[in-house]
Length: 218
Image (tube, rainbow, N blue to C red; front, side, top):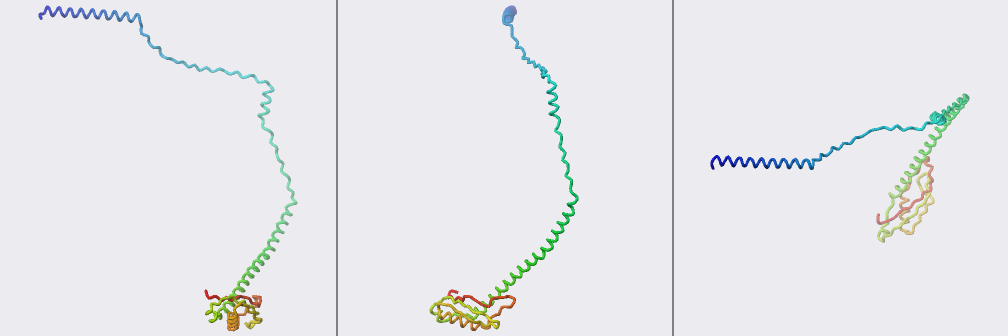
């Protein structure tokens, strides 16, 4: 390709480009006239703060007076103190003195009662101790007869007698169903003389009653 042909081709291409550009610009202008672009309108919200004055009904004079009367507090009633009689003071002193005298007089009585109760308890304990001593003394002389042991005889013997000051027994009564056991009890009582004698301050009855048990299972 020579220079003339190259020059012709370049001019032809340039003219075609200019032609196409003019057509494109003209067409765009027509489209702009026919359908202009619609721009979205901005959303604007306007807030209006308006205070409307509320008209209150005009109050009448009697209504105002009634409100004032209601607002006033009720008068406080004052309590008058009652007069205290001056003559009651010596009466109270007399009552206190009499109560104090009653307390003083009642104390020895309660103490005396407590002393009597404690002395009675001690006396009862001494009586029980003496009876235990008497029975243990007689029990120490008790024996089981051989004939009753061989025949496996068991039973109880009721004993009753009156104890004198010398430690002997009188009016002896032995009650039992087995004669061999009754005889053994009599022999034990005779061997236990003299018996322990209670003290005079115990004021214990001299009539003694108890039961002597004979059992092979002991």
